[in-house]
Image (tube, rainbow, N blue to C red):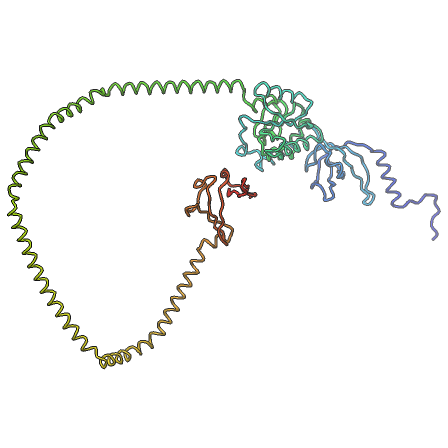
Length: 518
């Protein structure tokens, strides 16, 4: 059959798809759609995010492009009812229409509070809000870092209160305290303060204050973001948070080390009152002086009471002086009587020592000596005769024939013994050599020279004593350092370091070029 005649124009699939796309985009160039997020699984590997907005009767596909994601004030979460702003378009390849989202906001305060409660439970389950991880605030911080808006009343209140209580060095990190970039800027400020080196050109704060004024829950939402809560919990520097009014509570208040109801209260918690501190120190000094004065008076009274109970020095010496006088009085009489007694005894002995008596005693002693000499000479002659007879008997047995016979008998007895002795001695020598080798190996294994080969050294002073502690030497002492290949001389220069450090550094040399051992 011939095709029916018609004047309808023909379109390709692409033409129809593009026409529908233009119509939809022209009609719905900007829309706000209220619905519940469903099917959200986070960002795709490409950086885009895909999910569905639905209500009880219908659903619409939604997409957040990678470039739009960082600008979202509220990130999409599964099951959250939101109002999405964007433009409606089509996806020609699948004949589907979708909402390209440019902004997301919770659908009312109820949805926002539900999201806040879910996030609080999640972070609490991770232990970020545990009280045992909160640190004590420094009593007198040298440097205080403040993270807030540089133009609001908050920073003026904090600086004014710090100046009234205790003037301190304050470093301000300016950030936006509300809006799309608030959370990222506050997080970067916390991490930036923590990244400062303790001894760098810019001092590192001892305490941080994160503060802003009051506002609605939407205005304070940046301080409920996870990145800010985690940055506060991970900070190595203690943090005081003062976000909103006294009735406002954000998630950073749970993770911080101290929550202040207002920025002014945060400044009061950061430092004590200088005047009160000076008065307290003065009071302590006064109490110390009074206590010292009372202790001195008490000791003086005790000394006086003890002195009153002691006898007078003159009384202590009087008795001894009396005994000395009595002894001196009787000493002359005693010496005279002793001299007379010795003189009488000497006179009695002198009468007995006449010349005839002395000559008789000398003659008797000479007679006894002559008798003793005669007996000794006869005894020596008899002993010599006996020894001569014994010697003759021995010489009679030591004839050449008798000696040769004895030698042959000795050879006959020693040859078998020598045949057995040589192998036995060889075995004994081998055993002793093995024991000596084992002992040498053991000695070598425990020798300090092996330790020297590993890089250690033995330090001795001029007297050869080991130097085990730095207190044994002083600057200028000469020492000897034993290394693995020999010994070198050294001289102590400088003081010992306070404590060993992990990283080694070159040893300093003194004016003479001698390197320091420390």
